[in-house]
Image (tube, rainbow, N blue to C red):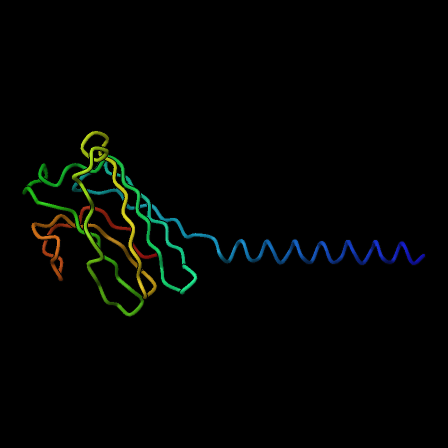
Length: 147
């Protein structure tokens, strides 16, 4: 009889551990969002993955496909700039898309990574003449909408 109770207790403990693991997996999953279809570059596609690191910062990973070279837009621009709007309703330039790589010029694909202290609520990409602009001056090429 003691053996049966021990087996039953072990099964209950195992089920509890598995349930806790599933909860942790769902809570810590990376949020993945697709960019909306662009009217500026309709063939452009991309995704944004947002995760938190061990310091509670938000890690933003962007993967893009079929993004035309910024110099081929009308009007032509020098670069693409990534903007993040936070929960505090602040918008910040977090960097530029590197279009000088062979992968971009050959396959029109690009990757981008940045870190934000504040939780992103929207991410968008604009075409700009200056990668260091503090306020968006160019046209919005891709946007996530609300996250």
